[in-house]
Image (cartoon, rainbow, N blue to C red):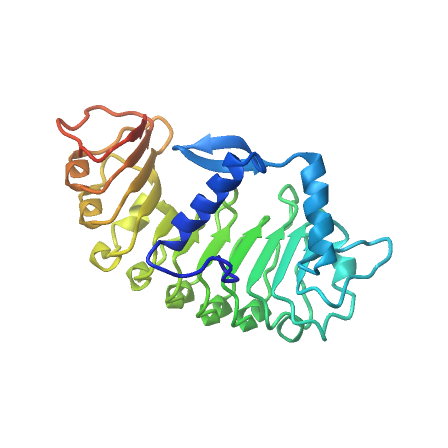
Length: 312
């Protein structure tokens, strides 16, 4: 999606991606490993098909996999995958490569002091960094990450406590995923300057003020209930999926009903606590999937006919 492989048209890009994936599954090229809410969340391929796909990708210079034994990587590829020795990879001279995508899968890579960030990775569209999460030390995200002006997809996984304010410079960023389901992360207020952001997935530890400025937002996950009460939902006209945590019975969730395009809603109470009134659900006319976790003292008398999946 970030690199523009999916042609733009009347169909929503995310739906087009799911359609292509389902076609691969139908032809048995991809196997479903896990589903949730009727959608594929994890898939796998046979070893032989995987090896063939990698071989063909290398032949046409679609991407290259860094080999620390030879300490070299193709200068013809604009997509690099690193499965280990990330620090050593960064010691290579990458200044002449107009890289579009970098994916780190390195459990030992816990130092993000990436030097010459802006000069080496200035053409990057996709940056995926998966680092060690069991370390006692926090990972420092450098200010230079704000110089990656072309970046459309950013995913960081590790013990990241906060992001630099320079993140607000990434005006082309569409997807931001930080520590999904792991550690809380403090997002700077400059995050709301990301006017093209459509997916924000991060268990942010402090309120993100002016979040309603993100009018392109389609998916919002990780927000706390006490942070949501200050959000002006009227401006979030494109929001289709909302996941909210730490809900307390004393809070009102009625303002969720103003999200007219909301189709997926996940609500999680504090451990053992009860939900406040859920009457607002009746007004969510486009709601298809509803997930409620912890104590429900009273269900609404009516639910929208549009709901097709429940998880209680």
